[in-house]
Length: 495
Image (cartoon, rainbow, N blue to C red; front, side):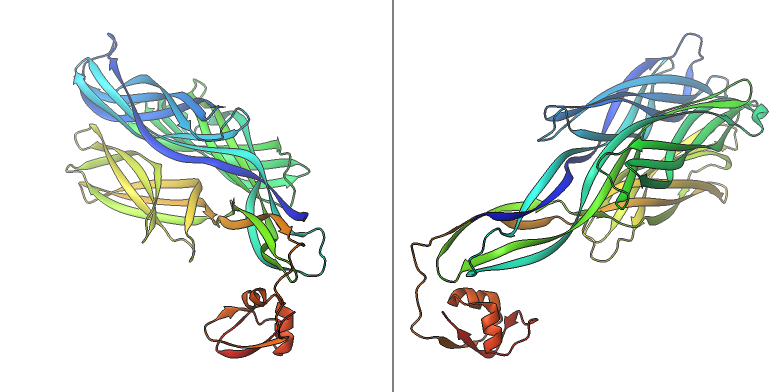
């Protein structure tokens, strides 16, 4: 018998990984630089160059620009820039050249070890997240093209939300930013940044994004001190987004691929940013699917296939915060810099937390610079009933203040976007055959009186006696909202 189908078009997520690993290299201090006495602080800035999908894998490559601040003989600070190249492979079934990957790379920890006064080893701990999407469609049985009036079918209603369309786009920001009181600054020592979305609208097959790049700069002053200063680069980007409609809900994720910031002689900061953006449009479907079927006059043979509908939906942005006091064992004169980088999302039975890797650079009373590192957990309060979640985006602000004389108080606050996964498992009816050569066994009576002890669905009762649910309801004066029976006598009309 010919089946009628519901068709759901979607972008299926076939790979979603988040891995940390280390890259290490050795470096020699240039002849023009003084010997190393002590490492004061280390920064790492990732430069993502390639994330090409291939047969069964995604090849990810790039480099990390390591900045080592060290104390030389005689005191003060000197800076070394050391590059580290990396290549990483993520494997996944179904990946090919037409797949759509979205990769994000962060340096969650940067460290340097002095091997001797002229040689050091630097290590970058990279956190690489990789998502891969492929276009897909599901055809699920909703009914039958022909019905002889004797075919009884049980349908179930399911409401699912799926990623209907996914687009990855690239863009570049180039701008000059005015730095207040620039005459005090000699150079930019390290630059970090995050892309923040303020508005996203779909209009006539285009996505209009407005937001800004928030830059966090560690600068060196003309008197040799380190300070932190922030600036903002606004942006508006318009992208073609085939397959997305104006009424769909859209989630936006950013990946910062490279960031360059240079202090020029005219006091302006020349900023260059390369970024990827992932736009995911969600669509909600109400599906009426056949879950069971039988014939009043003939036996039937059915074939089914298990199908997973990848239903998921965005949650409202969640706020999170955490604080921690860290003793450092020396008197602190100045907090020079604080950075917080998302390490991973930890989902436990009793709680869900974001683990942030925090680095604080401070100047002690002796005038020397030191750094401390901590992993800080930021708890998330998920809505009741939420089971599986995936991180879709994160913005975090970090602050540090001096407590007493020898402690630092860390304060973190953030906003994160999550996707809630609620996959639907169904047994889809793929074929139905009615054996018209064989008649159903006839009953010698027209009505059966039966006592239903434990709860039983009217559908199952009707199916076992080859009658209809409506016939049982009419014979027993039951309303249409009666779906089951328990501890009652039923009259069951039979054919």
